[in-house]
Length: 147
Image 1 (cartoon, rainbow, N blue to C red):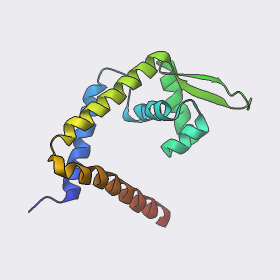
Image 2 (cartoon, rainbow, N blue to C red):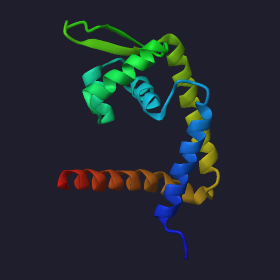
Image 3 (cartoon, rainbow, N blue to C red):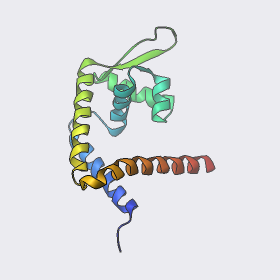
Image 4 (cartoon, one colour):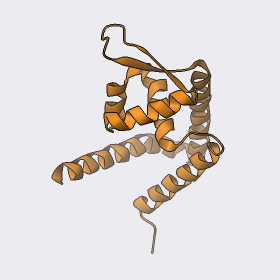
């Protein structure tokens, strides 16, 4: 039987999970905590409500993640400048450096992975992978709303 594109994507997903587990072994970082840091790196300081929306999780879930990240020195909470009931979550300087390094590593790995594809096929891959991700997001969202 010839593997389908889904078979290959599942394999890639598994490999990324293994690599992430290896990369964060010996730290307090879980995939969920790394996602919080990644969102803060890309969106900048955010309220916990904004983080919950970006991560598509409950406010309670974000609160627990932020508590753990704060205890381990990855983030800090500061008062919101306009809303005294809210706090802003931001990366610590050390975490910001770590996330900037992770961004550089991602760019390097992206380039390395794309080298596996013939140069003339790379534009199609660069268009196709985001299109597949968008379609899967649509299908998942539709399935969640049908429940």
